Length: 451
Ligand code: 5AD
Ligand code: SF4
Image 1 (cartoon, helix red, strand yellow):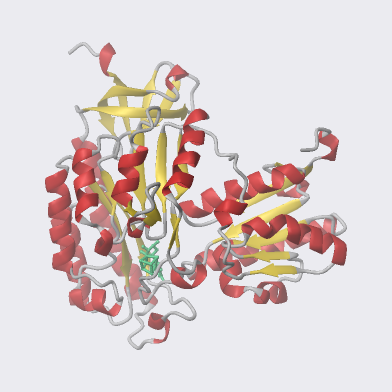
Image 2 (cartoon, protein in one colour; image 1 turned 90 degrees about the horizontal axis):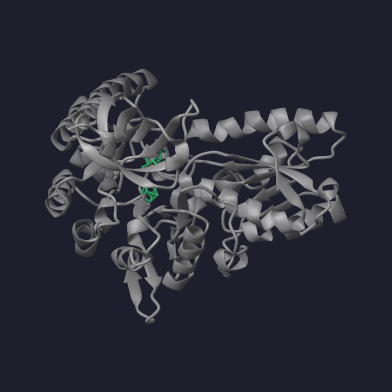
């Protein structure tokens, strides 16, 4: 690693989209550190800019091109002395079209090829051309990526699985991230142990389809996500485990049981349902029905009664009638979600639903989104309000806006802040919740309460 700070080049990474991109951005920073790149927050000063992109909906993909336009202007001001790289799912999906649309781009690198970045940087400085890498190479990118990680803090992401074989008809992920791959248990455990040595207390296991995890165990057998979670729970300094994102079809009996028997597994589950209508679920190729989802929820709640759920919904999928949408509202009412994400259907090139009939007008999508969100935001407010008066363990992550505040997370991922010592960071304390807001809770240390 170069020690002369003047010789350090500056690297600016902008991350769009999901948590897996957040994880990947940290790994790219790790990869480029030994060849002299240090992070900066300012793209104007950067020698290299990476946009780690998201292709899931049209809006996300279009943002990239407007950002690239701004970067081109900076690059011109700096006499071309800036390397612009596009990484992530837009890179995978659009490849050479990106350079055609924005010639200031030097490097296009798909999510399975990040370990090739140093080679690609060397290539463009040698040959003064562009470099493009969007294969799904046979080697394991995790083996090729460096051991250390620039992720710091109390809570961290750890990718355990990538890709998806489900092929929901609206989704680009099976095309941009490729088929399912699970990292071996030993590799994940080693990374988790390194994280905890740096002070991480909570790990969120990531995968596009994380509960389809089938990784090689230390015994040579194939392990499930439940096996992996129970194994990681033995790491003493690791206090909390979460996982995301799950598919209802892969909520196996042992994973449901793990919610009941593994204390470190937090009682909060993100389980996307997308729609409450059987007709639409079938057209989406979700491979489960409404009844199956409701039954799953009942079984998970039986295993862990204090568990809270969050979900994803899409409104305005092609062919969605008023009755289908009413079924979605009804499912939301039946389940009661603590939190949610909801989206207007966005036709993605190359996916089956994009070319199907019955596309829904934008104003209908808008109205449905608004109706769904007002129901679900009310559920979130009710859930937060139900926490008032309860005492819950909070893992403190950072200082608040004022010096004396500390902010942490409840078991249900709610932001909780307390007035008092910011020395709580990294610790889990029982907090009595005394105020609830739509997006956060406020509390006091339980031991300082006069009951
Ligand atoms: N249009 C709208 N929302 C989508 N999602 C995935 N693809 C699309 C699309 N084409 C949503 C789903 C998924 C979440 C990550 O993004 O709800 O669960
Ligand atoms: Fe996309 Fe998830 Fe369906 Fe896979 S399971 S295709 S990632 S929505």
